[in-house]
Amino acid sequence: MKARKHGHVSARSGFTILDLAATVAVGTLMCAAALPLAAKAGSQNTRAVSRMHLNTLHVVHTMFAADHNDRQFSVIPDNFGLRPSCALYQAQFGCIDPLVLGEDSLGQSWGFYLGCAGNGTNGACGNISFYKPIEFTEPTEGAYRYANTPRINEYVSGRFYDPVFFAPDDPTLTDQTRKFIRAGADFELSDPDGASYIWGHTSYDMSPAAMFDPVVMGDGQQGNNPQWRNPSSTSTAGGYGYRSPAVSQCAYPSLKTRLMEHAMTSHAPAPCNKGHPGCSPYMWNQSIESQNIALFYDGSVQTLSARDAMNSDAHSATPLWLRNTPLGVNGVDGAAAADAQVRTSAHFLTTYGIRGRDRLD
Image 1 (cartoon, rainbow, N blue to C red):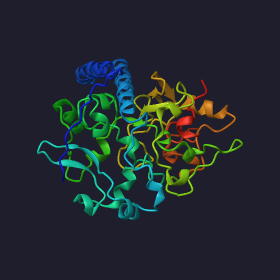
Image 2 (cartoon, rainbow, N blue to C red; image 1 turned 45 degrees about the horizontal axis):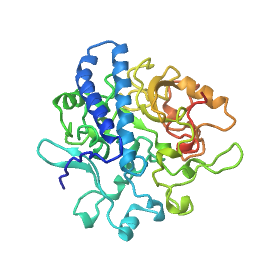
Image 3 (cartoon, rainbow, N blue to C red; image 1 turned 60 degrees about the horizontal axis):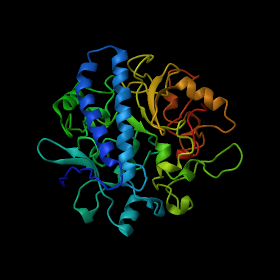
């Protein structure tokens, strides 16, 4: 496997990147100190730490956009929709860069590889589901869950397991993951089967709807029934459905979520979601009692409850999230919700993508 080097942010004349870098550095130090303490404190303290993390991540993503032409984090080529499969795309356009997660203590680089002969890596094209913003047939997979990979974490400490990427009361954090965070690890496998791929990713999801070209999530449709468009089609944005949108395309910065805590951090109906095998915690949209914290595009950090999202959706002339994606009316894992009255995929399937909104006010 190929090793990688951590990147560094450089100053630019006439731009405030140094100010932003200083803010991130201070915030990161505070977060690193606060995380182990907050784990022993009450809910109010852990909530404050999570808010601080999201404030820091706002600066991080602002820096990323400044370095990438105002675009958002993305790991899949803009023009991936020009070919119907990963294999055909790489055969014509060349190898897609691997989605590297990090480097372990032995110096090995770990990540999702696509088995492209041109870059000498193993792997398989089945891993392409992790490169897409969200896989509409397997919504737990997608780059929206990996905003702590090197392309983003180089703006913090260069570590997958930097404390800023984890909510201290995230119920999906295993003891092993907490150990990696405390030890200052970049990336480590918690077991030979690679389960840390699943439980090691960041506590804070990006909004996958806002990672596609807006046309994918119904942009440009008439009336009050916007239609989803397949990003893997040449008829969607001319084959550029996966094109990462500019942050400036956000039409409602104070109403559109950018990052959000993935799992319910308080008031969960039970420690384990009965709709899943094993003991998976409830996601934020699976209980009417959800009170998760979100970062909005204007930089504000606020609580967005499932109840609030549903009320906004009910009072909007146009649905605030799409029911006509391949995920259907249940949206993202809605079938495993705690009760029948919970139905929202705000943040995940926002109508109009980055140009939409997840609440009315």
